[in-house]
Length: 178
Image (tube, rainbow, N blue to C red):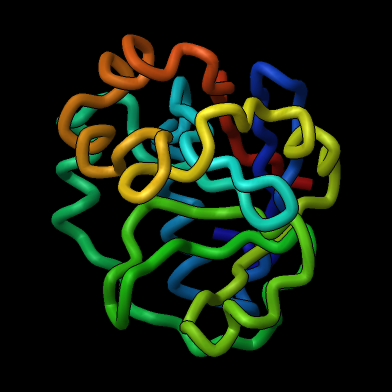
């Protein structure tokens, strides 16, 4: 994996590019490389869209694929960068809990820094795509009316397509090497 590389995402709302910097979060950058190069993100959904806060994605559409990654937690990286607008971090629920879910900061979210969210890259093209993503389902459930993360992981795209058909999707993601 290069020290700095780019991932290009084609979505239902247009393309965006993330520049990944290994120096920011070596373990996170390597995991993201593996996810992109294995086509993990292809045909997945933007299942948590919180305007003015974050957009989250990174649960495989195929539950059997997701279960393999869930069995491989990602060790924490020390934080070297702040969660500023456009930066990309792995979601987590405590130490040693990162796996595949990532989010893009839609504003400067420095409050997330103290909670252990570690940026590994930033959106360098197509930030406007995130403003166009469907946000009508609200926050995920519980407490909101949006999708349940556990059901996405066990039922995949079948659950999302049946109950949340307006969610935007990632058509494909691939590394771009300069």
